[in-house]
Length: 101
Image (tube, rainbow, N blue to C red; front, side):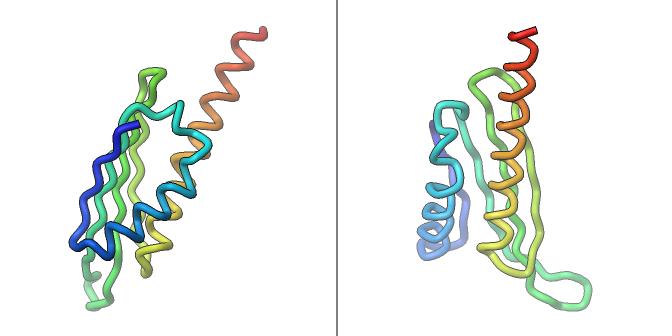
Protein backbone atom coordinates (compact mmCIF):
# COMPACT_ATOMS: atom_id res chain seq x y z
CA UNK A 1 0.00 0.00 0.00
CA UNK A 2 1.39 3.38 -1.04
CA UNK A 3 0.41 6.34 1.17
CA UNK A 4 0.47 9.98 0.09
CA UNK A 5 -0.07 12.32 3.02
CA UNK A 6 -0.57 16.08 2.63
CA UNK A 7 -0.36 18.06 5.89
CA UNK A 8 0.70 21.50 7.02
CA UNK A 9 3.50 20.44 9.39
CA UNK A 10 5.49 17.49 10.72
CA UNK A 11 3.58 17.22 14.01
CA UNK A 12 0.28 16.90 12.16
CA UNK A 13 1.87 14.39 9.77
CA UNK A 14 2.98 12.23 12.70
CA UNK A 15 -0.46 12.32 14.35
CA UNK A 16 -2.27 11.48 11.11
CA UNK A 17 0.23 8.72 10.30
CA UNK A 18 -0.39 7.12 13.71
CA UNK A 19 -4.19 7.28 13.22
CA UNK A 20 -3.78 5.84 9.74
CA UNK A 21 -1.78 2.90 11.05
CA UNK A 22 -4.49 2.00 13.58
CA UNK A 23 -7.42 2.37 11.18
CA UNK A 24 -6.30 0.54 8.05
CA UNK A 25 -3.91 -2.01 9.52
CA UNK A 26 -6.24 -4.95 8.82
CA UNK A 27 -7.04 -3.77 5.29
CA UNK A 28 -3.58 -3.10 3.84
CA UNK A 29 -4.00 -5.95 1.34
CA UNK A 30 -7.19 -4.32 -0.03
CA UNK A 31 -5.70 -0.86 -0.67
CA UNK A 32 -3.24 -0.21 -3.50
CA UNK A 33 -2.87 3.55 -3.00
CA UNK A 34 -4.12 5.92 -0.31
CA UNK A 35 -4.12 9.71 -0.57
CA UNK A 36 -4.94 11.71 2.52
CA UNK A 37 -5.14 15.51 2.58
CA UNK A 38 -5.63 17.38 5.86
CA UNK A 39 -6.29 21.13 5.99
CA UNK A 40 -7.48 23.70 8.48
CA UNK A 41 -10.30 26.02 7.43
CA UNK A 42 -12.77 28.43 9.01
CA UNK A 43 -16.54 28.39 8.75
CA UNK A 44 -18.51 31.63 8.11
CA UNK A 45 -18.60 32.38 11.85
CA UNK A 46 -14.81 32.10 12.17
CA UNK A 47 -14.74 28.72 13.91
CA UNK A 48 -11.63 26.69 13.07
CA UNK A 49 -12.49 23.38 11.40
CA UNK A 50 -10.38 20.53 10.06
CA UNK A 51 -11.03 18.90 6.70
CA UNK A 52 -9.81 15.44 5.80
CA UNK A 53 -10.05 14.28 2.20
CA UNK A 54 -9.31 10.65 1.55
CA UNK A 55 -9.02 8.73 -1.71
CA UNK A 56 -8.30 5.02 -1.58
CA UNK A 57 -7.64 3.07 -4.77
CA UNK A 58 -8.52 -0.54 -4.07
CA UNK A 59 -6.64 -3.49 -5.52
CA UNK A 60 -9.97 -4.81 -6.82
CA UNK A 61 -10.23 -1.73 -9.06
CA UNK A 62 -12.69 0.85 -7.76
CA UNK A 63 -11.78 3.78 -5.54
CA UNK A 64 -13.32 5.22 -2.40
CA UNK A 65 -13.48 8.98 -1.86
CA UNK A 66 -14.43 10.46 1.50
CA UNK A 67 -14.42 13.98 2.90
CA UNK A 68 -14.98 14.85 6.57
CA UNK A 69 -15.08 18.29 8.17
CA UNK A 70 -14.99 18.33 11.97
CA UNK A 71 -13.98 20.59 14.84
CA UNK A 72 -10.98 18.41 15.74
CA UNK A 73 -8.20 17.05 13.55
CA UNK A 74 -8.24 13.58 15.12
CA UNK A 75 -12.02 13.37 14.77
CA UNK A 76 -11.99 14.36 11.09
CA UNK A 77 -9.23 11.86 10.23
CA UNK A 78 -10.71 9.04 12.32
CA UNK A 79 -14.19 9.46 10.85
CA UNK A 80 -12.89 9.56 7.27
CA UNK A 81 -10.78 6.44 7.85
CA UNK A 82 -13.69 4.64 9.56
CA UNK A 83 -15.97 5.41 6.63
CA UNK A 84 -13.34 4.09 4.22
CA UNK A 85 -12.85 0.87 6.20
CA UNK A 86 -16.61 0.26 6.45
CA UNK A 87 -16.90 0.72 2.69
CA UNK A 88 -14.10 -1.80 2.10
CA UNK A 89 -15.82 -4.29 4.42
CA UNK A 90 -19.16 -3.84 2.62
CA UNK A 91 -17.53 -4.39 -0.77
CA UNK A 92 -15.68 -7.45 0.49
CA UNK A 93 -18.88 -8.87 2.01
CA UNK A 94 -20.97 -8.23 -1.13
CA UNK A 95 -18.32 -9.82 -3.39
CA UNK A 96 -18.19 -12.86 -1.09
CA UNK A 97 -21.96 -13.23 -1.31
CA UNK A 98 -21.89 -12.97 -5.11
CA UNK A 99 -19.19 -15.64 -5.39
CA UNK A 100 -21.02 -18.06 -3.09
CA UNK A 101 -24.35 -17.71 -4.92
